[in-house]
Length: 240
Image (cartoon, rainbow, N blue to C red; front, side):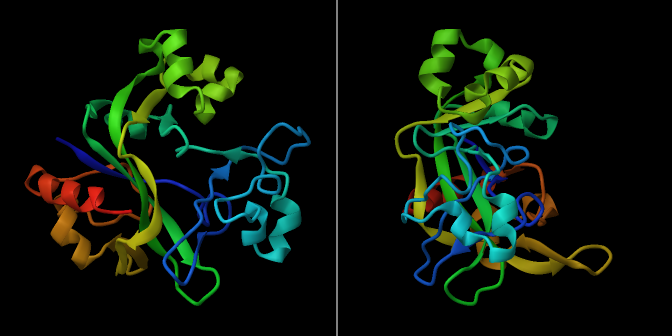
């Protein structure tokens, strides 16, 4: 079995903010931007898309950024309605080794919205993997049935360009977007002594230390050591 951690969602480097965390531990998962502002009414944007708590995503941005971000389209990936994730880039190609029953664990940067809480990284959801493969390995019917809601598939122009290199993952029963975020980071330092988000001491007891590569700030997928897989899987599946 495999357990893999992957960072997703809006952050200060892609979107300009961290996702909103609320005082009771709940949160809103905000997707990253998908290109410049648009006037196409059919595209989901930060202004016309509401989250699970009924507020438009744009309301979570500082007022100074709302005009700039309102009509920016969303790259909704992963999506937690039918549980799909796609990526055409080389750093994510290792996810092709995922198999039925493995866990793909998503974490994101969140920051206190209605209370003061410094930015940290939190587990926000996971897929209990059901299907994985390159888009080119699936028929058109399978793509439509399994991955039709994925952002890379819905954009037919992008899909045509990416198909040979687009890796797709579908979560099965048990997959979920959490209702309460689970903190997994603490502040460490890089080689220059600058602040760096690393896996917290408490989470190392569950996920191991990734072979000493503790940075999870902006990193490729992190695969849990086999000695920690059972413990990590039990922990993740207990989250709600």
